Each structure stands twice: as structure tokens, then as C-alpha cells.
Length: 342
Image (cartoon, rainbow, N blue to C red; front, side, top):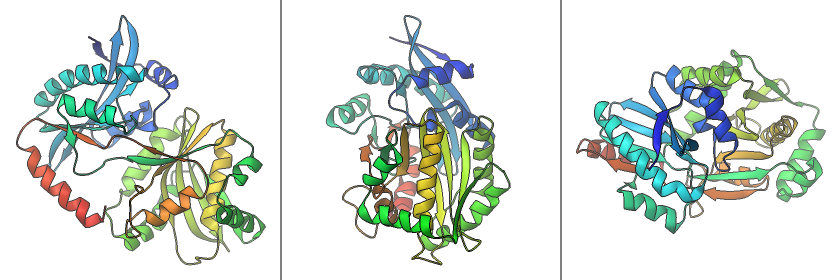
């Protein structure tokens, strides 16, 4: 139904994405460059109908101890939502052949489509099954930031608005941003505090540095820091891409719990997104609605929702099993999910 070709032109790739409504930077050209920098093999496929580009899909080969698989992060990206099923059918025909040549045991997709019965049935019909873990956020929190600062503050939870205003009055709090690679190390120091608190496997310093380098070439990334009396208490790595700001990584200290550094930092991040012409701010992942207080993201979710906005839920991560090696991976990931408390 579709002609599938690899796209090697950055402008063509990004131009198509600019016209797509539902997207995240995980399908951007620079995310592909980052994956290559991390040692992964990638393919950028375009699906054409009558010579018109109707869908794109970044595909990454992941080689791990638990097995090798092809992965589509927050994709495929489809111009017309009605084409989702036909795009998936065509793409899977191509990816099955690719997977065999790359000795992959399964294909995994983190969909970028709304979680509803119709879309879930599409994946089931093609032969997908729900993955044991998620790779990228399946539930996110978004905020329209096109209105004035006063209107944005008015739309926040009363407590959040109060803490931002308290932070603005506190002369001991300083918020600043950096585009210096060496400041990634400063972010990582605070990030390690979060790792110790929540006991999870973190991204490496090398990961943060390479992500920063790949997006900084187009001025699409910034590091924010929040200081209290010259001591850094909070930090965030923000990606700005195609009119959307993404709160991709965050870290904070609990040393002064009553000092609202994190709230003021987030407010300054949103204001910077507005200055850059962004219309939308994506707070990235939040806990599902039925999550208990024991969920690792429960407190963070409460924090993010306080700024106003809406919840968005995507179809859960999907696996297309190609051979029996998949089940070893399934067991490992199932155990990992239980250990992390998700």
C-alpha cells in the first residue's frame, strides 16, 4: 500500500514532523543522532503514498544482555490518524524482514496514539501484545502556554501559585540556565541524590552528555539550576523542539523541603519556553490515575499537576514476538518492573 524508503535528509524529516499534531522529540532527527552516538544502529523510514510522505518512523536496534530487538520510540508518526492501521501493517512487513537480518527476537513500539478501544484493537489485530515494561512515558501531563503569564498562574493549583510567588519574593533563591556541557556534571551530582532516594538504575553521565551535545547543536536544549544561598537544590534538562518544551530530566535535593526552589525553577522553565515561541509544555511522565501513594512517581505527579494542564494517555508499549528468545526478555523485564514498584 505504501512505498517505504529511508530518509537521509534532515530538512525533509523535520519538515514532515512540523505538520504533525501528535509528536514528541523522540522521533526528531537529533534523537536519532543521539541514538547513533550511544552506539545503536538506526533507520529513518518514510512511508509514501502517491509520492506524498504520510508517515515517518525512527527505528532503533537495541542490543542488551536480555536480547536484541527493534524499537520505535513514540511512533510511528502519522499525518492522518485514519492511516494508523495501514501504516502499521506496511511498517511491520518491512520491520519483520529487517529484524530477521539483524537477529532480533521482537519488535517493540511505544505508540504515540491515544489510548482508546479502537487503537488498542488495531495493535491486537496486527498481532502485538502488551509489553512487560514501558520504555518511554505512556501517561503524560501537558499545558497550553500560549496564554499570558497571569493567566497561566491563575490556572494553577492554589498551593503551587502561592509557592511560586513565595519563591519570587525570596532573595536567597536564584534560578539560572546554562548551555555549557560541563554543567551536565553538576546536574548529574544532584541526579545521583534522587537515585539514592528512589533506588533505581540511572542514566549514565555519558548518556546525559551525548543527549546534550546532539540537541545543543540546534539550540534545542538547556540546563536549569535552582540555588538557595548559593547551594544548588534543583536542576532540570529541558528539550525545546518544534514549538514544544519537554521536561525531560529533573533532579532535586530534600535538604530544605520548605524552600520552593523546584516550583520557581519550573516556572522559569515555562517562561523560557514562551520566550522561545513554544505553545505547549510537556511535563513528561506521570503516574497512572489508579496509582497508590507508593508509586515511585506519586509525589512528582502531584507536583506536575499543580501547574495546570491536562492528562494524555497513549496506547501501552507493544511487542510483536518473532521467536522464542523473546520470553527470556519478558521474564527479566517483568521482574524488573516489580522491583521498581510500577
